[in-house]
Amino acid sequence: MNIFVVNSGSSSIKYQVFKMPATEPVCSGLVDRIGLEGSTISYKTNVNGTGQSVSNTLDIPDHEAGLELVSQLLTHRDTGVISNPDEIQVVGHRVVHGGEYFKTTTRITPDLKQQLKSTFHLAPLHNPPAYSGIEVAEKIFKKAAQVAVFDTAFFQSLPPKAYRYAIPNNFYNEHNIRVYGFHGTSHRYVSALAAEYLQKPSGKLITLHLGNGCSMSAVKNGQAVDTTMGFGPLEGLIMGTRSGAIDPTVIFYLVDQLGYDIHQVSNLLNKRSGMLGLTGYSDMRDVTRAMQEGNAEAALAYDLYAYRIKKYIGSYAAVLNGLDAVIFTAGVGENDALIRKLVCADLDYLGIQLDEEKNGSREKGIREINTAASGVKILVVPTNEELEIAKQCYELQK
Ligand SMILES: Nc1ncnc2c1ncn2[C@@H]1O[C@H](COP(=O)(O)OP(=O)(O)O)[C@@H](O)[C@H]1O
Ligand SMILES: CC(=O)OP(=O)(O)O
Ligand SMILES: [Mg+2]
Image (cartoon, rainbow, N blue to C red; front, side, top):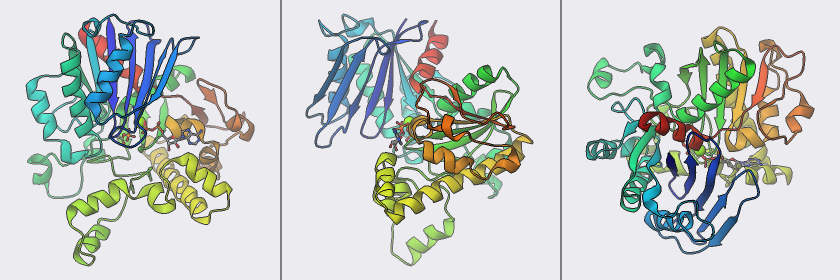
């Protein structure tokens, strides 16, 4: 089954094609800086071997233009992996917020699209581009089943004590205001791989997805029991441009005293805060460079970022009543040894002991970075949201 997976971000589209049940993608790539100066498109076949790659900088004004270009590459005489778009049988879309409506992977229908529109305000950075990705894919891949895989689905197992807020009940009953949790596709994928690696299906795990958006989850017996993101993907950890947890009193103050309207507050906390607000850079590699050059704001931002994570590790060790492994994943979690070091420092009370040399290694694949004496395993597990999406589409459609 030919499955095209689309992960639409606000200004990017990550994509892969799988010929399931094979789990190696036949091609993958990225359309980046959509609508900005210097848009780029990259495309690679036979991803882990000696395939062909294409990389171009050109004008890509919107998601439609981006997906059109991808479709041309997929069907290109020299580099293509299919001969025409109708050979794609399923397009799997990453949809960040499923709201109260969508609890599992679902075939996209006009009704689903309508309901998806009503979730735009809950995930303003993510759901609108996912929606336009769906609309464009429907036009290009006319014969394919369009399928949505929700970030929120993995957190359907949260118990009420973890997902309810202490506000009057009618806000939950009538308006579905509750914790949903995000990055579920990634937390599901890495926790399953870690449980397999540890040969402990009933393990007590803490997964740290540290990318542009960041979240953690507590996982027991393969099921999520708590997570740091909430009603929307703004709560919890400090992220590239998002503040994470903040006392709502700050919002009252911004509105009452500083004259902000609610859109300006949303813009501030979603797009101008986090590492960007603290250092001027949202990309962790830039923050690292600034810190190495002696920038004190960047050093403080690193401390804040790691300290927030450390507090949730303590909290989740209590929630799980024990801990078998801490798992780092996504762009920062997989690559930034300093963040891992700061997070794991002074946690020996919990049995967490990092091996600095192993932490510094750049080996690919799953790796263990704890000392031999550590009571808790510390793992780096590369995530692959696209593969997990493809697997779920395959299960739904086969
Ligand atoms: N070698 C690296 N060292 C530190 N941070 C890195 C490295 N490579 C990628 N990152 C960071 O990972 C983040 C992006 O992670 P990613 O999982 O790709 O995010 P998203 O899927 O949300 O776009 C960026 O902040 C980037 O700087
Ligand atoms: C939910 C979320 O924050 O996603 P991303 O990390 O891709 O921005
Ligand atoms: Mg991501």
